[in-house]
Length: 565
Ligand code: ATP
Ligand code: MG
Image 1 (cartoon, rainbow, N blue to C red):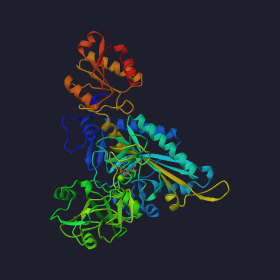
Image 2 (image 1 turned 60 degrees about the horizontal axis):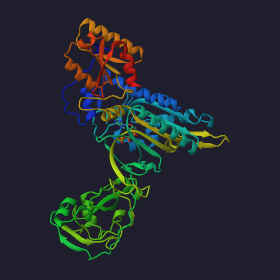
Image 3 (image 1 turned 60 degrees about the vertical axis):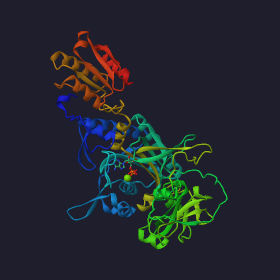
Image 4 (image 1 turned 135 degrees about the vertical axis):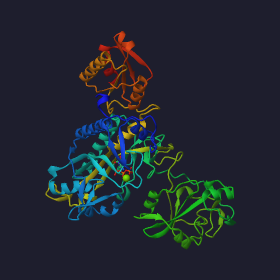
């Protein structure tokens, strides 16, 4: 491709709304442009990279035996009623009306469409197992679209759905997708951690997320430094430390703490570290008030709390409820004498000499011991895991926190959708059975940006060769006929070797061409300059190295091939 004939609007400055590195580089390298919040146009070069990612995904899905289909983005609302998700996913759904005033949904995902299809088309064990996939546009009305393609309102997803006759077969289908995902991200040049993920209302230990490691990632995760345990922070467990049983000392004593409500304020006022305070957090679990107790230096994990409660809806109580159950304004609630069920973090078992809210305005209690002064209904793992916590799976390991970008998600669904849509088959004995399902997503556009988040430097992108929009940037420094002729010659030689190049034929200063080439980040750069040409040579440099070599023109293509293999 010739630069002068395409559209690559590179930018010298960092655009104002770019918050993370990859977003900046996508804009500056002229890969994408924003239309509105969470809506982006792919320009020619960005689209080439996207197609490369798609191609890798398609190849690995085909290799794993998945069958490509293409489902409508526009879906009748009735199928969402059937699954019950019209309600549960209402916040992210975009809806439209047709000329007959019928409501339609712009698909945020496709479990409903595929299960409805399978229920009609698959009836026998001979038609199972099957896995279907598509690469298609999804629509989600995200609360906060941000970071460019990372959290968009319209984005491309590869979604796959497996249909199996029994659990054992589902396990195999799940494994096949899991392995395909591992190969996909590896081929994309991404460093990913595979973590146990929360399965929400569905329960069980059957969901994994593929996290591209990056400080800018929206997800927290932990991994063990000794064994293979790794989990999303939402569900990461921590081992129960044996309680350090010190005999509780003095009994609870009321101290005045005027105006001190937050952990920081109370800690400063009482000259106690936050770890010696107990947070008493009042929640409504399916409408009933309950309290969670965690150490002052810990964060409550609401996912774990909901699981301990076994409730479906959990939310923080409003100030009015708090006042009603504790007799004090927000900031002074404590476990001693509180009449609602107390759920305590297991790290607090046997804790003594703690400070807690006194359930009266402007007061706290010190010298509090658990369970001596307040009896919880039980001890649970309620706090977020963090660096230094003991591993839940091995005796010696310690957990370490990291940030990640969720690029893929594999999930065993069981019969949630197949039951709703009556996806039934006849087994070998002629008996009716419900089909088991799994679903598997990759954020294709998010993956593309995650690659840039991991692969860039101060000057721009460092594309892995597998997804680079071009393998080679060809830079004729002078626009004279002879130089351009050599450049064209090289372009053809590279093409014969199966390598794609971007020929910068603009009438621009060398400095501009160098800067843009670094920005765009093609893995190899070939400079065709006057001095080299006099000796029949061109300069070859890898984007990720400072060293360059002068190579005879006729050897250039072979040298580039060697670099990229
Ligand atoms: P998240 O927790 O990031 O919102 P999710 O759990 O909603 O993700 P899934 O429904 O499992 O995501 O979708 C499959 C994949 O699609 C995700 O792993 C992610 O890579 C991608 N994805 C989800 N939401 C978006 C979005 N708003 N923009 C871009 N990609 C997305
Ligand atoms: Mg989401």
